[in-house]
Image: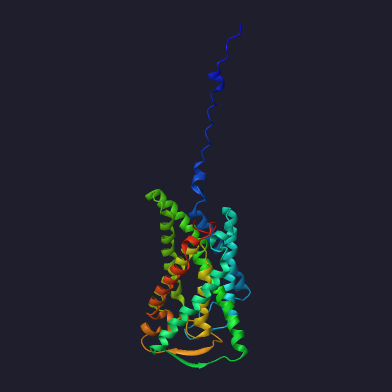
Length: 337
């Protein structure tokens, strides 16, 4: 007679096989969200450095790189201004694309992903013209800026206006994508992970974002020190403007508003009103102007950005961002979510 079956033994689940642990070497390079932020930034900088050195080497061999520095009174030509911004932007965009493939992320997460990109871009354009005009009007009413004459007439206004609009669009793309694109996203990612481990807080993302915003805004301000005619107030203004643009990135998750504002602000300074932009002047501007009075008030050779009134303007811009760019409207697939 056969023995009865032991149902308890037959129904007992098999013990799960323990998941293989990643090797120590893999843990050095790979974290929970992929390639660790420090290595990502290192690779990003390394690729850019290699490309820049290659371009300089070829340029010197072909006598395309002169190495001359701009002087405070020198006006830059449209072709020089455009190529000086377009080529670096293409390099940054290309390297960012490479990093998106390495990290297996969509390229849009680094600042260009936004289903409302065009409304936000054009809104930034409008606000950029409005606030720069307010600053210029303030300087003119107080007698700190004098309009001497108009330099362009007829079709030349539209022609050079369009040329310089494209040129400063490249400035907006380059400076925003360089300082608040991939590097801002990646440093935020790394710092947020550190803050989460150290403080175990649900605000680690915000802490990481604003720490990286402070770092790159400081670098953005210091980067303007190489401009001819720049002043301490101008450098401070550039750094604070970087923080204001980070605020728009925090509110919307994209760079489009900041790119529009940055484009219109520089275009209005350089072409429309013919004032210096961080000490730099451009050829073929609409008006001829000159500052009057103490540089801390008028801006002096720096331009309106060197005036103490710029602090009031940046405060007002922050209010506009807070009121018009509601953070709850951020898209789910853009950076910092």
